[in-house]
Length: 305
Image (cartoon, rainbow, N blue to C red; front, side, top):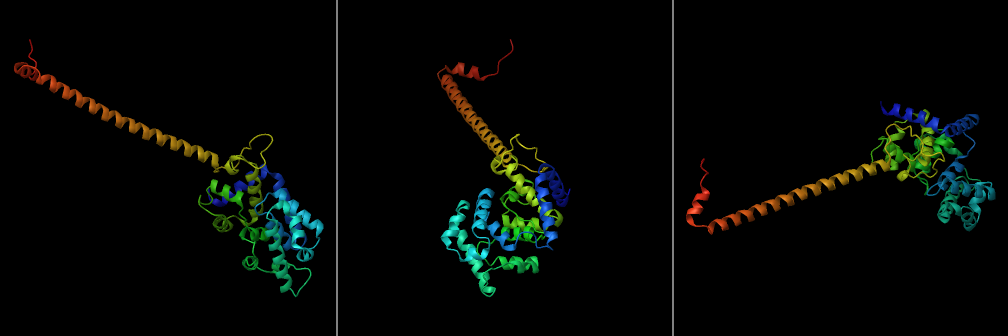
């Protein structure tokens, strides 16, 4: 089975386990099609929502974005609001001052480049190809490869395969990338081989699965453990961290036992040799105490009577 077949099989198996994920993606694709590829989400919405999800939980990120949108219906007002006000609204996501500084810096840069507009936009990116979009977005501090990939996939409907911590972990377990792969190297490898038509579903399914499956979760501890007990993981080649650790522990125990056994055998051999040497010395001493004739007789072979 080649990698393409593995990706397709993984997507099919996980779709059965997490049907709500693929149902949501059907809605996303319909939204993109109904709006000529523009989707229901603006590029700026997608950029800032993804940035807000960095280094925090989905729940906190969603709450921060909801707070921000409720107080500031447009990004123009976010740009001109006092930084302390914005930071207070998104504090639940953590790193609020840093996030505020980066958002306002991006908005001010766009406004300046777009003639001082009160409503900066990133919709111009839709007319660019993927490489040009990546180059344009990567010039802004706080927008990395994962954020760019998510924007291309979800806001523009492009064939992109974002790699987050869950995707990376499962990809390593399944042997799709090397165990030493980074998120960036895994993205470069997987983005070129995962079929475009399943990239959105496979990405979302792996993210969801990595949060609920005991076998695929970090350290075997899912963020949202199923109430009915551990899931039956459909990923054929996936080996969990816990299993690896058990194997490593067994190997270490075996090596320790083997080393101890060898050491004991060596000590026993030395002891036996020492005992034999002592016995030989005792025999010599005993024989030296005998009369000469007795010594000679003891060294002769026994004669048959």
